[in-house]
Image (cartoon, rainbow, N blue to C red; front, side, top):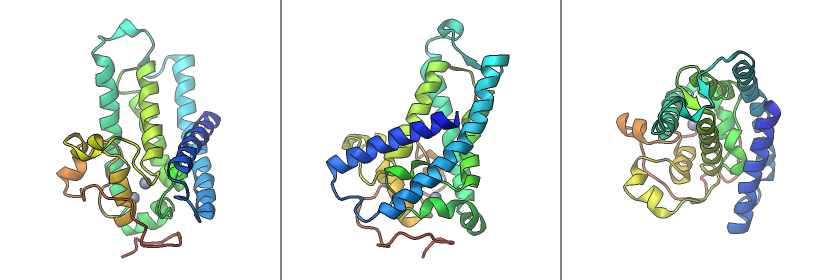
Length: 242
Ligand SMILES: [Zn+2]
Ligand SMILES: [Zn+2]
């Protein structure tokens, strides 16, 4: 499973890095050392993500653990999109609160400074996490499959959304059409324009897929542009820069 997660990361981040090179040549100029660091941390995270995923996949296949089903008729068809939404909402809530926790000074230093060393982030930063942060992310889906029933195809869709949004949110440019992130729908959805501002300003825009928690808790700072970062030479901060 670690191998699958690692290869999935290399293909998805590599694919979007290539798209960046074609669409915005020079955007990652001078970020070579940072990108190498992002890849190293991401592959370490892939190893961590693979462990609970592997145990659960084995338990599902060998022992019938989990509430993953493959008989499409086991639940009504309307439940397919509902289950996907439930997974995204649950993951988003977990991410928001663990992310805020990791912005407390002590935990930022320990667990989250690695991710914020990407200034500005690139497509390779999708899984650039300290092992502690990787662990908080790795347990979510493996835990949810014990609680919320989901068709194996819907689960594949959830994992695809997770992968694509993880990469595109860090890519340094907006791949989605303007109406999606700048219109009424954009008030509730998170794309690169929202997460880039988190990497610029730190103490805002903590969400993963939806802006619901940020709105509710007053931490939403709106969507930003993609101006040059304040810090021209990426380096790792032990605390949040003022
Ligand atoms: Zn990020
Ligand atoms: Zn953060």
